[in-house]
Image (cartoon, rainbow, N blue to C red; front, side, top):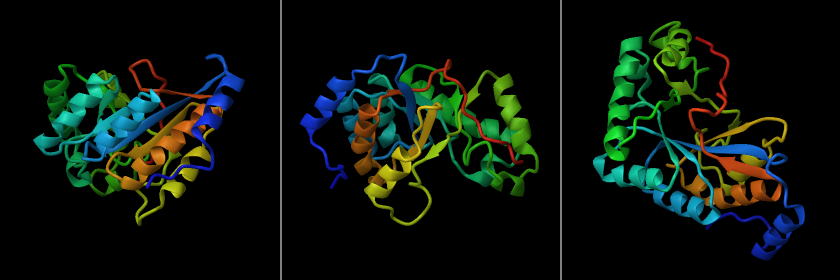
Length: 233
């Protein structure tokens, strides 16, 4: 059951028509999904399609049976970005070479599926992660510079949906985590996961709240401002 706040389709249409904000006054939100694709990705794509919203998917290496969701997302105009193949911290952050070897696996897979090389990445755990210190002290200080040298652009987040914090949060909790953090004074980079059912169930309400409140939703491109966190290793 999807969590929908207490408003109707008609009230949404009326609000949108009343405000009719021009593009230069609307603020931007980026919906980003990590760790997919999964079988939930199909429903998420259905919602994005119905709401006419483009998003960004930071994918990892899953079974070939899920390739169709990467292809569909790409064909429907979403950005397919890279999140490393294994998302295994012990492998990814063992060394600089190990990181790029792992990244290349998912990069080549995405290129085979979409026909296009992606240079948009997100580090497992974000660039501010400290777990990498366990495997290679100082590696994030090196990687955050080296990925740029190799033509990549990396994106962290400044809003977390909390869907990877453990437990089983309700769709309402996910909704509140996102909408209460949106701000018209910043670029909003929202972290979600398309492997979580409660995120799927909150998504439509998040989008409608954003539309009601003057936000536009965009996908990440190579021209998008990098939203990065403080490097702690």
